[in-house]
Length: 404
Image (cartoon, rainbow, N blue to C red):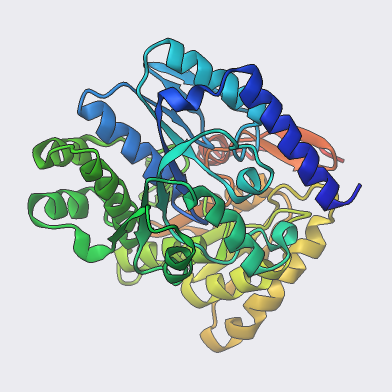
């Protein structure tokens, strides 16, 4: 079945869900957040700001859905939910009197009409960089999928630092209110609170997007400042794991060239002068092949030590994937003299870094899986957690998957 026919079937499926549940999004204000990186942090912060202002808000992100004090698991390797789940969910929250839905919106979900009938009122862009070209084929088609969120929105909030904003701006109708943000958006006490809460430059931009959204909803500055200071960490996003070895350990979802570069630059700047930065990551099988060498090059440029490993190989051979990552690293490793290792088993890679390589004062960051709870080999999902693998390695063990 070709993609055109599949997309038509996706549309009919989504339309059926909207009709069956009575187009519930008409009765709630939906805030859609899209972008290559930063969607989850931005969505979570918008949700937190709305709750701090006493608004009845619900969040659906790729980590989970949050309804009041209830956390709802949305599955493994989730992008945007399927339309029948989503429309039923919206109907339920409308019936319970919720007034706002913050919806993390992926390019796959947008292209496959999963968000049809969500009636997005405020559309927010974090950034658009290299990702998902295995699916979208070209950057232009990837951008076109993202554009669907903004067409029809009442307010579009765009990142002025991102090159895509001009293209999006030209594509919107005159009735759409355009609001721009960048690092200069943050001022006064809000700026101070953000800089103290988020040492990462990229997260300050995510915060600027969320704060701009909150201000469009008339949330006052004192409430924003208080909420920023109290904002908890998002699972799997620069999540630090404390330990007694005197090393800094982080788990992060960074799985694109842009995200990896941002994370590594942030940690390199923060580490002690004579300490080492150790990066552990892989690239998913049956996904964007072009980014593999790009990420290898980035890690070899920035990190002192890089370990390439498994990240959902699916039907691909993990050794072939790591070799493709290595091709990018080889372009700079000799010149920079950074050390490169290949450890196909992710648990072994994490244990090797913690038990053999890292010394007191060093920093280890494990990228690509973040909050995810499984690892895909062939057709099967095996239980997995980077955080748990770190905890086991700190105790001298190795977390393994018996996938052979």
